[in-house]
Length: 153
Image (cartoon, rainbow, N blue to C red; front, side, top):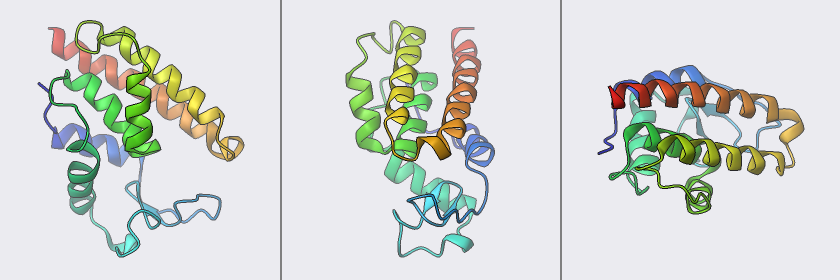
């Protein structure tokens, strides 16, 4: 069911991740389009293009996750979690939700994002980045509902 939707994902990345940032409080270091120097030390982060970022997202964040049998709206939420918290955390959260993501996608996503919020509150840098992370979840809920609405029409 879920396939990598380049257009929707690119639009989201540009809105949510933005351009180049080098915040000394960010453990990822230099970041552009959400791609960090810490994760990709051999890349020139300042010069990375959105096309290269999308290639990385597809290869390293979408393809390794078990998303193929999920509705795109649900897969999109898990994919975004993978970007922001890492694949391992995205998978752990997924396993901790007792709702079926195909039969009960709304319940699944709301519980999943609640667990994601709890995950953030336990991080040492929550006081600095927390507001942004919680705002991201709020925007993600809206995006999920928009995508879900298109799926059920």
